[in-house]
Image (cartoon, rainbow, N blue to C red; front, side):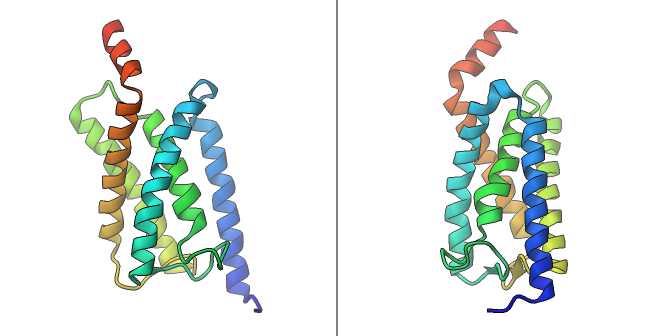
Length: 168
């Protein structure tokens, strides 16, 4: 199969996004919290794997240009690396000590940023194409999966959170 210039450009874009995501991981995940980041990463990977396969198999979204085309129809980059990596950053930098309004803004900011990048990718690349999907479904599902990851993260590290409360 011959690759068009657009496909080559889209592969380059995916590689750049991978590098940027790796850079974000190095910047926002402290060395002493790598294990915590891995827990959040793996949890989000499980959730996005399930949702990603469901959405793709139902024909709601397509990923025309992606790595591992023969493995499955979902995007390895988005579902298995980028979203989980950003979720790890989300959890490790969560404003635990702030009020509920700031926490809500944190969710909106993270869900909105990912949704914005997804909409731009949908509009200007072939890395993702909405078939029967709208941007707001992405925003909602990302927000819900962030919330569930936060619940899981707090449950998994409940002893750590109890100790923080005792120290305060």
